[in-house]
Image (tube, rainbow, N blue to C red; front, side, top):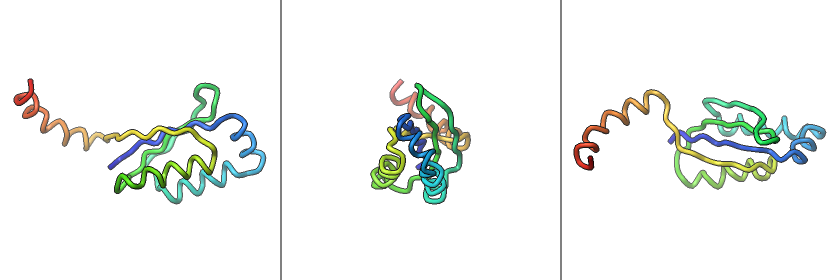
Length: 103
């Protein structure tokens, strides 16, 4: 299942991570381990933030993935299932049946 992992890094943890080089090292390791199909970085709410889109094979990976962000960069995270355009087309093909049954 494709999942978007949105993260925010508190200022103090981000500053210390930049000073020590840990921030770069952790994000390099995250990219190697998670193999995101996309990753974007931006400021949000006064913090360093971003998101990765990854393929999660099973729900038990939620804890494993989350802990990498918690321990690695003291980040707050949100995980949301997402679709790409192909997934959306597949999903929409069944909508008419749902509308007929429930609409």
